[in-house]
Length: 418
Image 1 (cartoon, helix red, strand yellow):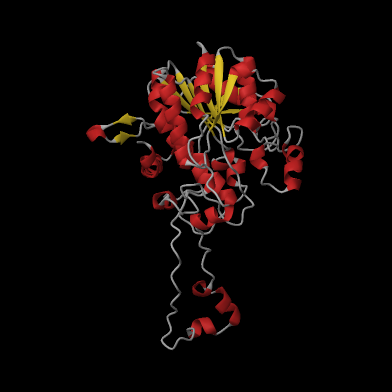
Image 2 (tube, one colour):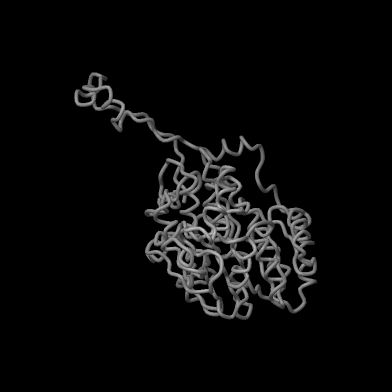
């Protein structure tokens, strides 16, 4: 599921010895305005300015209650399977916790969330038994927080395996005129939706390997899959290019290396590499990290899923008010588009990929009620329907591009793997 270098733009030097514009440019005022050399350069964005604007980091160090929270959780687990779900305090994540703990036996959820008090309040409203989950602090806008969470969990597991990991937390900032940055200086959609979960997986891979029949689910989106209506016709279209932005590292604003920020595309690009969250955790020749294919990690099932167009979750909080209110009517099953899914049903779908024996297959992009490659009831992934194996787009399946994504991402998280 990125950024390009935010170095200051160099001044423009026009090819005219006298300092006047060339005749071919100066002939018409309209042509002068349109000439690329006279266009305003892309805005230059700075993570340091972003930090100064908000006044504080998202994560100010390991909270004193972190160890206590995880220790208490592990005392309550018993013989149940341990499932970590990021972004579990609202929307899809919250409803997945509800469905998993109420419809399937033998699961205990560690809700990895930014605000533990919010999670507890939401869980009480949903009727989730306090004995079935524990809210633990995790700030996905900080790789340091991911590292601290993982280290503490690993320490307190004391050799016990981790049974399930659900990479669900995400941000969607389509109306932002300029990028926001994580604590480490990565564009927010890339940093939260992809990089934080990439690091989380690398750190927890040894614990997943210790569990019997472990599963990892990376929540996807049709918007990052160019073989769907939402991913191809709804602009802008996801296009990660050669991942020059990821290669450049902190300060970049777009995955493909562009210096022109587009919040909607940043989200789609961050969702376009679900296969690259999996992998890692092993050592190849010369002791270097290896990138196993998404499908071939023995003993661990890696998959992705599309929950449907929920539209009413907090993920859409940045949308204009009219769109948040109109989406259920525009996309609901009874209408021609047929993509709308309630939060409850979407949560049940995610829980199914975690617990249902039918979903115990690696390398699959799970979907329901149509592959979203055409609109209309039964085609667009809306409410109802049975679980089936959908197909990734060519860009998502591109192995060469995937290897670059994995290599570049490993370089970015390397300081936090120690």
